Image (tube, rainbow, N blue to C red; front, side, top):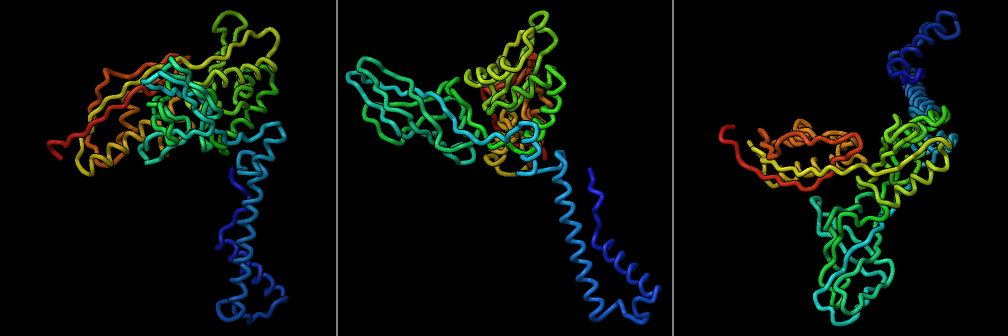
Length: 379
C-alpha cells in the first residue's frame, strides 16, 4: 500500500516555484523578484525543505493508521482492538540429569547452582539455574532437577546434551546433561511485528465461526506456538479436527500442548472432536562434503553449519533461510540452495540417499549434521 501524501523534495520545490509564479502573474508579488539566487532563493529552499520533512512525517503517521503498515506500539494498538496482545519473551524451563559414580552418601544439589553449555558456533555460552534444592540419596546414581535459563529468548532452547558443564562445584557430582525431551516450557523471543500482524488478521477470520482459521488463531494465542497446521477434513472420522502445533524448539513440550488444548477446548463448538498434538518427528541425518575453490575451510564449514541449522530454528534467525514447517519435505535442492549461499563452494556431495519425506502431520528434526571439506581438483 502506498501513502497518497508522498512527495519528493524536487516536487515540493517545483510546487513552490509554481505558486510564486502564479502570485507574480496576479500582481501579489513583485515581477522582478529574483528566484534563482540571494536571500529569496535561500528562504525558498528552507521552506521547501521544511515542507518536504512535513510530508515525510505524514507518511510515517498515516502508515501507522493501517494495520498492514503499522509497526511497534501502533500495531499493538490495532491488535488490542481485537483482543490480540504481543507475546513477551520468556525463559526456558526444563529438567537436567545430575549423575555420579560413587553412590555411597547423600548429596545436596542446592538452589541457584549454575550449569552451562559449551560455546556454540558463535562462541555463546548458555547458563541455567537450579530452581530448588534437591537431595540425591545414597544408593542412587542420578536425579532429574528442575532448571531455568538465565536469559530470555528462544536461544535458551538448547539441543540434546548441550548442557554439560557445572559452574558451581558440587562435590560428588560427576556429570550433568539434558536429554531429548528436557524442556518442560519452551523459551520464546518477544513477538515481532510480522507474526503479530498475522495473528491480527486471524482474529478477524476467527469471527466467521469455527473454521480452521479460528483454530489457528486460538492456538497461536498461546505463547510459545510459532506455527500451526489445522487438519479439519475429518482426520479421525466425521466431526474431528486435529490441531498440530510447532513450538519454539520444534517439537512442543507437553505443557505447551496442554495450554493449546485448554484454549481450543474453551472455544470449540460442542460437536467438534478436537485433538491437539505435536508433529511426528522425522529425524534428518545430514552428511555432506563441501568442495571448495577458495576461502578458509573452517570459516566456510561454520557458515554452512549455521545456515543448515537455521532451517530447524523458528522464528527465522538468518536472512534468506526460511525454517521448515509442518509437513514440509527436506529436499537435497533446499539444502544445496541454503549451503551454496556461503562463498567459496564449488559443489556439494551429499551423503544422503535422497530427499527426506515428511508426512502431513510430521516435522523434520535435525538429528545429526556431519560436514567435511575438500579442495576442488580444478577451479
